[in-house]
Image (cartoon, one colour):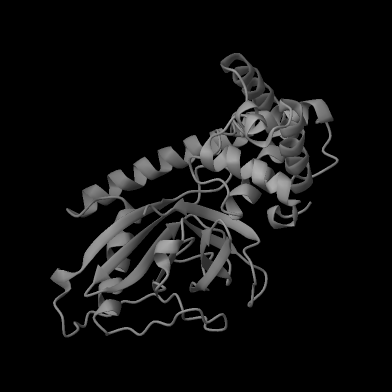
Length: 314
């Protein structure tokens, strides 16, 4: 399974024209002065290279059909037929999700750049079970506290307050230090800096979702600004316990390492929760996406197991 960056230049160019500019095979063929079939062949050959191989029940014809579906090159009736196939085929869903994850990781396709991949029956059941559990927990929380609200939003506010403290100088923050595990730190400090926190603003909220279209885990990132300085505050829930969650920024040319989060635990009140703050890099405006990955190494060079993604606007 190759990476997007390893593809030949002509194949990468076709995928970028399709996913970033919304071009059809016919439009690209006219632009490049080649046949529609040649454009389609380059696109599907590229997807074949970055997708897993040897999946049972997924022959070349079906794989090409799913590839056209992911790239938005089908008619309404063809899309409906392919979706029916994906709902019934575990192999088809696995291949489509792996390809979609690689395209998003490479920054070629954003959150809204690819069509929905149907969930597994088990995932649907788990989602409904989780929904019922969340509703029950929310009702209990509202009964026991006038604050109520959703856990994720409450935690996001806490982290944003920490980001404001970072901006006012209470917390230090580094940039581009691959070996600093505190680059994305969690804070419970209640101190105040020399500038009032009320002058800080949340410039943007970024919803973080699984790259495969699932319903868990979930996260929220806030870009907070004050006096020309910025911080990125992140909170997540329902994550797999690990010591190596990493925050990255992405654009069409690659990824930027921002730092590690504190460990996500398997028990206690913080079970499955991710929370952290990092000083935003000076070139933040040149990035279009945000990634949270779970790594097996303490010094990753690129994101491997992407668990949450979000799109930065402007």
